[in-house]
Image 1 (cartoon, one colour):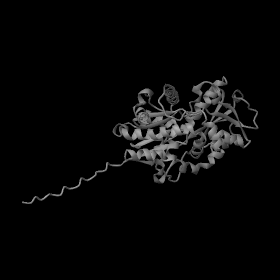
Image 2 (cartoon, rainbow, N blue to C red):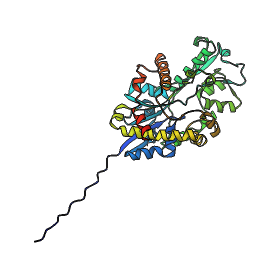
Image 3 (cartoon, rainbow, N blue to C red):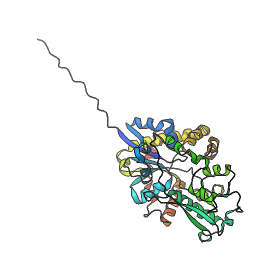
Length: 358
């Protein structure tokens, strides 16, 4: 009697569906920019069977407006606070998953041949303030500058009514070629590194206005031309609230996506935390990377600017207070329509899980 053994069919290995995620990062000092350049974002996403797609790789400039409006359901946005706050207030249900306090208070710049030596000298003079004509996105440039101007005036004992605010209109319809990562995108704006462009700069140079607000990187480039000088630097004051300028840097993701794909959120934060720790320990090397994705005029300038920042994201009371200040300003000055609770917006669970994993 013989026994016939039936072949047992081999089990098929079923691969989980690939989770595609878009990400977008502003040209700012944050660890997300470093994580992308070092390949660690792709590495961490691969571990959870996810794929990171740079938003600005979309053809026909399709990624530009969603960078501000957070309109894709599977999008990470890491960068300036103003668009992220507006998206939460008026457009999308998002979670705040991390903050990085690396922004600096801005500066007031005038022509070097002027008789203006301090902000008090601007009484009765003309302050240029950018005004975007693009209604599809929030005017974050104006929002940043307006708060900086008002703070500088207050420090000098002046009210808004004691200067002339001149709107500098800009079509704000910038077109970029598709890029696979942020450094490829921002290389298309290399002129910004040398202080070139900017309608407010043109107006200042031509004498149509007397002063502008500028971020420190641009100011460095402007001063090097010999044509401009800084008469107020908000970063030099001990009051930390003066440093709130389109910041702290915010990392946010849509709520539904976060709740359905928590492992992807944690993977993103693992990559960012790894890059942050590396940046904190390797400032000069990190400066070379950040120089490619920001607009300081040189690597050494970038290294000096980041020397004292902690790049590890957090949701600390201090950073949340900074977001509260920014949000309240935007609400009080008509940049956003709806109020919300910043502390309820913040969800530390993903950050805690990422830190535990590392």
